Amino acid sequence: MNSALKREYDDLKANAVIFWPSELAEREHASSIIPLLLDTQDKFISLLHVADTRPDAWKEILPATAGLPANLFLKHIMVLSDVGGEKLKRFKTELPSVFDANTMQYVWRENTYDYRFQTLAGKGNWGNVSLCVDGPGLQMSCPLSPLLEDVIMLLLFGSTATSPDTPDVILERCILGTLLGNKAELNTFVRQRYIWVSRITGGATANTMGHLAQAYVKERLMSALPDWDFSRSSIPGISHSAGRTQMAFDIVAQSPSGKYCAIEISFQVTTNSTIERKAGQARARQSLLHRKGHQIAYVIDGAGNFERRSALSTICRHSDCAVTFDPAEIERLVTFLRGMAE
Image (cartoon, rainbow, N blue to C red; front, side, top):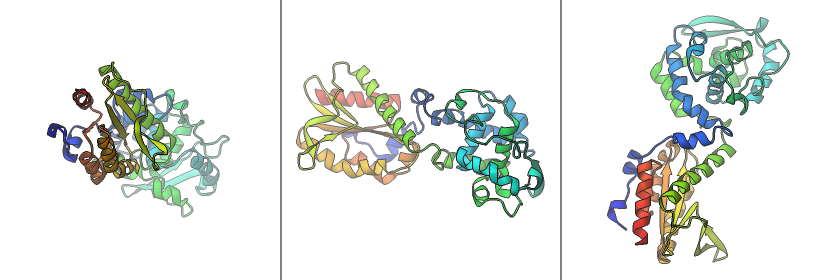
């Protein structure tokens, strides 16, 4: 293996994108809230940094914040609080018996405040559709309404509500407002817990983004190497289960001369076990491919992946070429593939 292509964890991280490339994020806007939240995260944090004079100062700043409508602002808070539409529906029915006169008394900076809910006693629910925080709703800019204001205030300050009957889930999760005015702590809380603290954006969304990540890399390779074949997902003669099953790879690149390179893709903003699985397979896969005269490369990126230093170090050791999602890094992979085929 060319020593110039040998990567270490620190080198890989130094050249990483860390968060979703804007082009990739744009593709998922229609079916996922993650890119939309990522795109507006800095605006959300900046608003909270400014809104620290009073507990409701955010109401004055929000209308003047371009690109951050009230429903999107609320969605950020829901994700960080890990409170979804179903819980909010339940709160709507439970809280009238918790807060006297529909008023939440809460503490902020050692002072006590009252917030009177405007929609708690009314008809309707606090679900995702009503709040315009479902997929279609987030494609629209919804201004601040009494309904949205009620839910925002609950999620911001519910953890300091003085009513002894306040549900534990509110006391435990609705803490964001307590961080207003403490820029360092607020910034750390949002950036470390953003997205992955919540089940709201998990599951199928991560799978969708994984497929988009593969397509993102594949398109660039096909554009740079128009004479190569990228139609396969396996390599002839490479199997497992005692030869009964063809071994599948995220991308298979076949040169015009018939040489193969398996390419594994992982872009994880949230930390999970995917990278550990790929690391566990790395040594055996490289050994098997080398015995057949083939190569294996990895395209690895994302904040979640770089939390797994040991796993990424293993992949680097057992990869013929390891790169990130940075355009210059993808070009590095292209150069490797061209050199492999010579």
